[in-house]
Image (cartoon, rainbow, N blue to C red; front, side):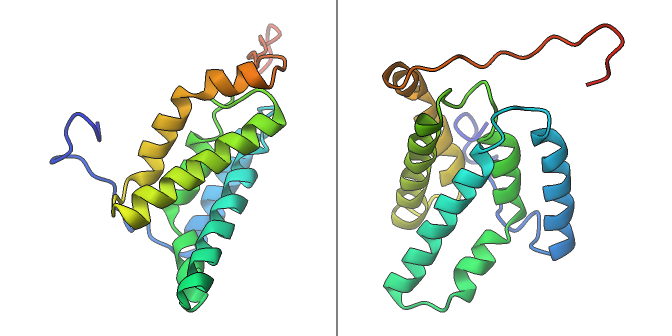
Amino acid sequence: MLLILPNTVWVSPAQWGSALWLAVVLVCLALLVLFKIPRRDMAPIFLTLWAVTLFARALWLGDPLTIPMHQLQNGALLIFAFFMISDPKTIPDRLIGRYIFALAVCALSYIMIFEFRLREGLFYALAIVSIIRPLIDFMFKSEAFQWRKPITGEIL
């Protein structure tokens, strides 16, 4: 929708707020989801790399560290990290590939957000980097992710 209706649809980083209770609720819900998938490492990888990026920028600019702390308390960022970039079918199969994928999303997001002033940079970066995911999987071969079939009567 961001690409189809750019004048109508937008992402407001503040729409989710930055209250601590919201972060706790989002993380708890995220853990429920991530508990069900074997590749639950993607969200922490991405959040760590993004935090390092934000803190490095603040240190480079001489900004107070409260700025990157506030940027990390964004509900939209948590939803992105726990429910979008961590989708097991759209991330590389091998761990090194997931690090490269997350690093590429962080680097492209940084450029889009801080150089081109695109608030939606995270989403655009994920879409662009997802295009090269098959190349990453080709370079670092591993067993492809498969959803397991539930046993009759089992609740997922």
